[in-house]
Length: 329
Ligand code: SF4
Ligand code: SF4
Image (cartoon, rainbow, N blue to C red; front, side, top):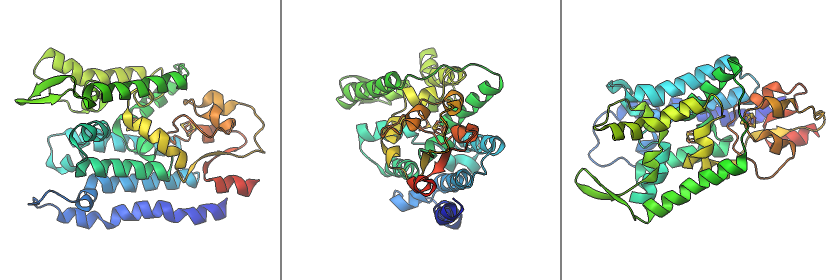
């Protein structure tokens, strides 16, 4: 295992150093560019650079088994602050950390109005981080994801009993919302007038928890309800359900669930020494662990939260690659 970590360390460090090395480049980008930024100019913005740094740190700590709940809370708070709260403060210092386009908009707006550079870069970063570790973006960087994870941890501390997920049902709802979005918005059968222009209704605009971080009051009561309700519901439901917004609504959750099956690093089962005690299934918040135990090829979402690894008394669950398993066997 030690040798394996040694071999895999470069991947974590390359994420980390890529972020650090490009900081000076991003600082040069202070002047207003005349042309719209290119893919790489956009990628070198502080938002994405810090994302690579945070993901690199999280991955290294997971692989080297140095992740603990204190570090986890610190990283999740940092992500919530940087990409959720700070980005929406009226301070220029943090303006470039803004989640615009939000993960939801990266999918929805791109499908409605075309794949523009900001959406392409956001999607590329999310997909890249999903391919490195299972959902490294969703697990450690997304502010809505981090908020739900933190609430879940707080609920555990308060001994609030969590409801189990029925993944077939949640996936049915998540796919259903996506198909409805395609039908209503993609086919442009319903319209609204936005700033004098008639545009197709984007269904995800009405269920977008990312808006909750933008604390500006809207014009009408209905606008405020549409703006804040998805976030408020997400916060409340997170006390009883693990990451409700991710499993039920988010199109990025859906997309990354397909992609995470090809991730370099994922949770792997080592048998023996697993003695089928089921502690991991009971203590883990997700519907994924039972499928890992069955060694199922298709799994529900894994957010690399490390809970199952932490609670296994036999250290039979590891954050690693298929290689880890083969070495043990
Ligand atoms: S599924 Fe969506 S809301 Fe959840 S963590 Fe990923 S991007 Fe964020
Ligand atoms: S408990 Fe394990 S399988 Fe479930 S989301 Fe966390 S790391 Fe993934």
